[in-house]
Length: 345
Length: 98
Ligand code: SF4
Ligand code: SF4
Image (cartoon, rainbow over all chains, first blue to last red; front, side, top):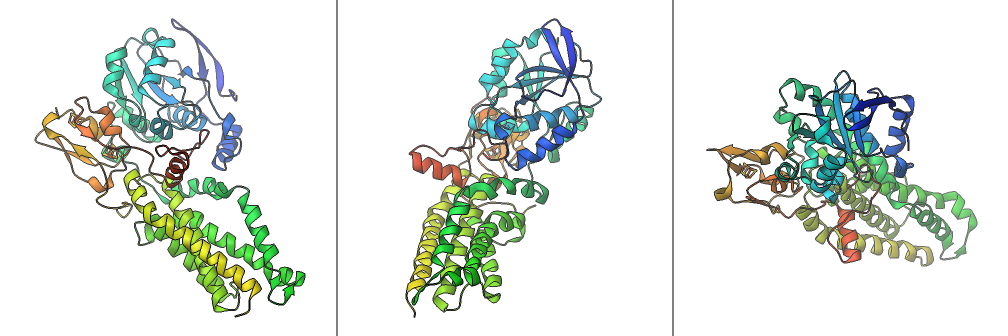
């Protein structure tokens, strides 16, 4: 566990508390990038418990966060120049919002940490500040009932904490909103790219092998001369759904993610068709349109998991029709494409 | 980003105004500004923006709000179908997915 951000220890009536730096080291920044690309995420945790920022005392504010290192890093950076306490609760290394949805950032865990770390001795007041997105898992009135601590929900973004403090613990309406700007969407794309895992190698390999078949026999030359185009087509369809659709999300006119993905998929297929990547005959071209469209549609629908405005009821409704259609498109397309390997029309 | 609104008319959010004490907690916790106050009581103003996160229902001290909350995520729903459970996400170490 990386603990390079600890600079010393503060002796308190509740025992020694680690003092932490509010700046990011080069390693912190590098780890942030790695985490986005989902490399070694498992180990990216912080030990739960209290931490001191600056030289806090009995009157200082208490900020609660999860033990996902990125959440912690954003919080400590936002607190630079402020004397405050951070209480890290155990969310199994998951960010606050997801943890709240899953029930690890919970009333129970907040109450438990307040008790085992003797927060009542660390500070005289009875207020803790939680990130607003933790509210999905925490009932403020129950925490109050069980511990005497009032929960105040801070802004959605750690970067707004100073403004929140300056305004007497009030977050403006804008600070309470979750938006989904392009920059945020782009950050979430890397995780989705690896959704297919080893299928990303196996499926193209099978297509490559099959591409040598012709009604007249097997041709290795054909694999090299044009078979590689199947790999391009497959990845184009895949990326149309998991990169293009999320990146262009607000500008694609449909509400359903599956339709957004179908649109980007067919757009890409159209480009490939004009470049003669989809084969010669009508059957083969139609087969590719079906496969690329279905694949892209499915991948785009998956992005509902990363989006910040899709409801469970909505996704369920969308999937009910979209999933069977996607499966049918890919199956029929695949069957058609294999058919053209062996039979001349 | 007004066009970032999902399917209309599907959300399960419901408010029992009779129980509301006007504490504003639902307004504070909602990430999509679904609620407003009217005559010192909460009203649902932008229902189609609700993502069913459940924060409002969880934090309403009077139990005035009901919503079927869960992960609005296709992968999670597929997981649920495969395992025969409620929609559940499978990214235990996940930082960015839910
Ligand atoms: S949280 Fe409940 S009691 Fe408070 S304003 Fe909202 S509906 Fe009313
Ligand atoms: S469930 Fe979440 S998004 Fe919907 S109204 Fe409640 S707090 Fe807002």
